[in-house]
Image (cartoon, rainbow, N blue to C red; front, top):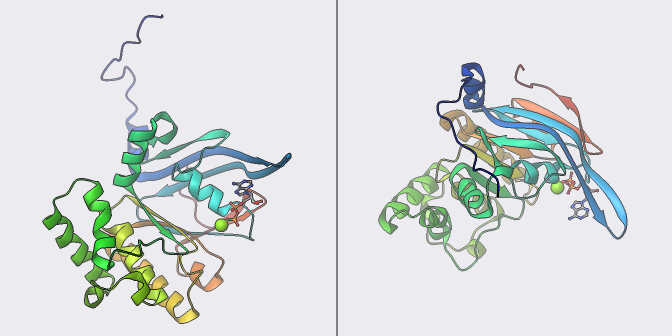
Length: 253
Ligand SMILES: Nc1ncnc2c1ncn2[C@@H]1O[C@H](COP(=O)(O)OP(=O)(O)O)[C@@H](O)[C@H]1O
Ligand SMILES: [Mg+2]
């Protein structure tokens, strides 16, 4: 057994500039590599991907099917691990956390929106939205109050008793958006959020996301195939074969 490392505080060299950067940057990913191995075949899904996202940005990740968009999102959110490189979210290195604190960190700082909504079918709209708050330990009354306010913000206050099966695709995605945003996470990840919607509902959902980004300063990272959707964002990142090949608005180094 070695001698336990002594923690010194404050650190000998306190780097104020670095501190400021970590507050402004919500995502700092450097040199991410990820290769899937299946059936004896190595599939490189991420190759040297670096990405910085500032608070309040709304950005779209685009690229052909299989280019690594979902893998990137999952690795940034700590749902999947990388082979090399590092990810910091709001200054925290996810890989440094054990499972339980990582899950807790994710619940407090991130919201998720999926293509297939991922709502619980037996719960009605307001119950789906309040679930993350109950998991975080809020009282039932407070969770219900906030869930109602959030459903109101996505224009679904008249549907709070409806179960997912009793809602249209666009309405289901509104419930999912309310659920993702109800605990005011620092960042929201959306993987093809309009992929299962007709073009009219897709347009409404994109308007809603853009409005929530503008009015609540919500940082949004979304994966999409749709050019017209990406056009609503402040920044587009294009991927090909596991690499970022274009970034229209990386923050300054
Ligand atoms: N669990 C997995 N096992 C093996 N290969 C995978 C797995 N997940 C994704 N891949 C492969 O990694 C590459 C990137 O996949 P993905 O990130 O899902 O792409 P996209 O979201 O851009 O369509 C693809 O070639 C895919 O086949
Ligand atoms: Mg995908």
